[in-house]
Length: 109
View 1 (tube, one colour):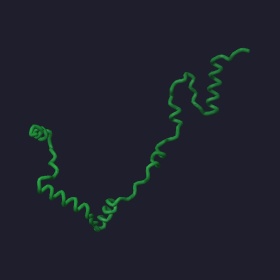
View 2 (tube, rainbow, N blue to C red):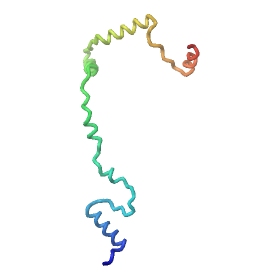
View 3 (cartoon, rainbow, N blue to C red):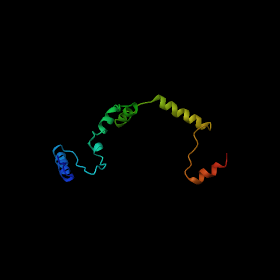
View 4 (cartoon, rainbow, N blue to C red):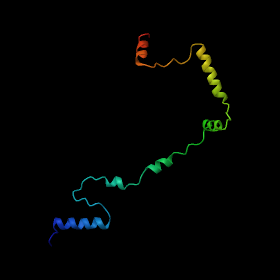
């Protein structure tokens, strides 16, 4: 029984690939077809996290459009505490605007 020639086997492989719609790759190079054929992961990852619900801040911002400003007692209390701390000299330090200002204060420690 005679064996088939290499050219004949390549023709057969090419025909087989065209019938089953696969990639003809006689040199067996790494083409990445396995990754390209895979299902996209983006929609599955996006569906994993729940949609963002409306927050209190969002609702307050919507009321501002109509001139109905909400009163946030906790926020007002926080601002008041910050003002008191600043008057006592316990507030946050001022930010330096330039590199020269920050270099000048490094030696004072």
